[in-house]
Amino acid sequence: MLISRRKEGETVLIGDEIELRIVSVRKKKVILGIIAPRDVKIVATKLSAAEMANTMAAANSVNLDQFLHAPSGEAEAVLFLLEGSKDIGNDR
Amino acid sequence: MPACQTKFHGVLTYEPEQVLHIPNGLFGFPQETEFLLLELPSARPMAFLQSVRSSNLCFISLPAQVIEGEYRLSMTGGDLRSFGYSDAAPPVMGKDVLCLALLTVGERQDTTANLLAPVVIDIARHRGMQVIVDAPYSHQHPVSTPGLKYRAD
Image (cartoon, rainbow over all chains, first blue to last red; front, top):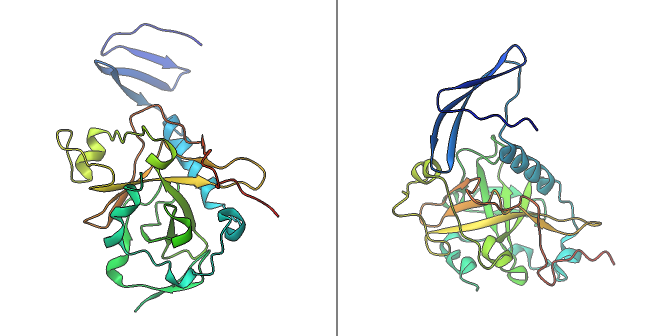
């Protein structure tokens, strides 16, 4: 990894077309400005991790009975009323 | 009364006011903005987020605090404001909001929970938002809760 010291307002060029600017530094937060061609995809690492986790979670195709170790036969009673939802977070 | 074909629970009818609105959708699923929050009495506190428009899309979730007892919901200032709160008065988990971690349930690998990007649900307003928390939580946090291991028998 190349480590480069920069102050607020200074820039770094990556290749010929990508410019990275340190817009501001406040306590523990750095605001970066990125100038790049339109076809360069820029995604924050955390966002890409969150998208990946959602995609994997959406692919769950489990047999619920086996997963829950309990019959899901009471399925018609499952419609969850949001009004009663306060109980969920208070279970512990 | 509208009906919804669900992934796990057959066809369910619901009242329009029971729909949970997530205006921005979920990460990677921006078009999914309406869900039903379902639960099975025998599976509490697990909750199911069933998409209204996509019958085959249903997320399985657990409250983040059930997975990680010390879990704190640290939303960024921008997320707080767009969700109707502020840095000075953030929402309280279990009182103002539910904070649900979506689970990836594997037949072969362990179940994991996305503690990095929980779905936060405003209880009073029936509105939700998936946020990336401002804390070093994993998007693949191993879930060790007994009884949550998939048993293929």
